[in-house]
Image (cartoon, rainbow, N blue to C red; front, side):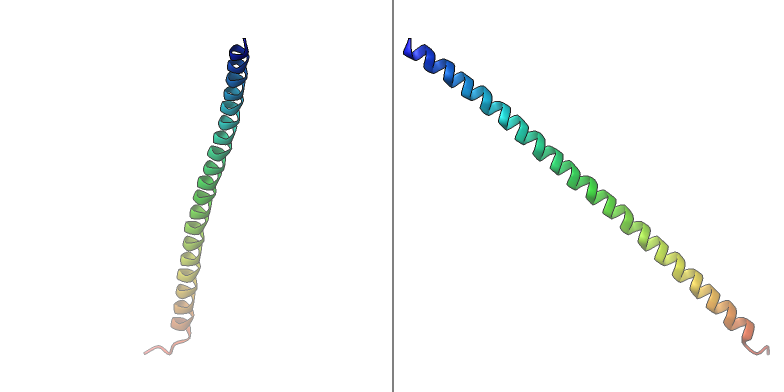
Length: 75
């Protein structure tokens, strides 16, 4: 009888342990997924920022060239 009760408690503790482990695994998976998503967002914003800076630089260069050509003496 004592062995049967011990087995029940062991089974109960194993079940609770499995439940807790599942919760931990779920939390770790969610955190890992969030880090991956954040990394993708940062990467996308980084690429967009580089594109914007390139576009602004190109536009500024073209504007300066246009102004320089307009005020340069004609030969």
